[in-house]
Image (tube, rainbow, N blue to C red; front, side, top):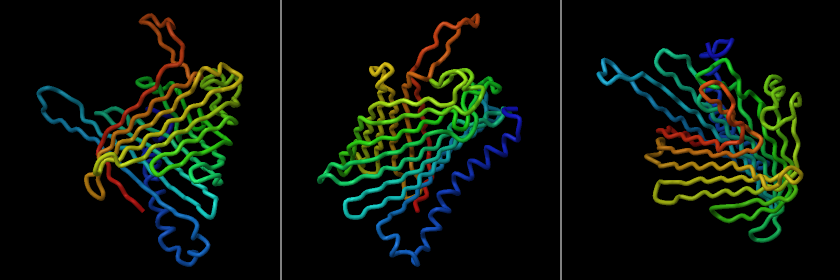
Length: 307
């Protein structure tokens, strides 16, 4: 078994909750006419995407193994705008599951992210802003194919960014620059914190750092029915090797087929100096324990629900 618990049940429940969260949010706001006046400065939007991939073999001479995978993604957006004040709130959750042949169900993607950005207009394109961003995951992650070695867990790690700075905003893009940013890393799983994973000192569960932060976001329909979303985040710590810049770069290309269907390509590149990757030779001797470029790519057919 993958875990000491009903694995199928918990994976399935979490997958469904992510799907339902977006729908329930939309239902609550469809019938909000009684409070329309008080909510006038607010705008709400939610988006759910389900991406499937499936392969079936029967008497296939060349061989193969049946497989089924699915990824659920939901995004909830609440924006406030009145006079010179802008307040954007975004919650995004993703959970993916996969099953190959007779093997146990495993997760293939798992994250949630909350961002709140409060800004006050300084000029036509510039704003003073305060940003809070939190990233983590829902469930334990394992070093497959070894499904007994836990490498991550809920809030292990979790990253909290708090920044004060300036925001430059245009129609299709914006960037935030802050010279006063706090980055806090949480590792609440005792086994992982005792090992000193994700940059925390051994036995500690929190690491705090101060540095500079840049965030760049670009969104545009590059050609008809093809939308590009590009997000790049950079962080440099002042008092510990400031030349080491942490990178989080995510690109989503969405190709619209019709109102409800789209093809999705999602890539995520991370380089974090505090996250080490152990590489061993054939004899089990450690030959490398350094930070590596982490890369993830997802492609699939998506079914989208806009509310």
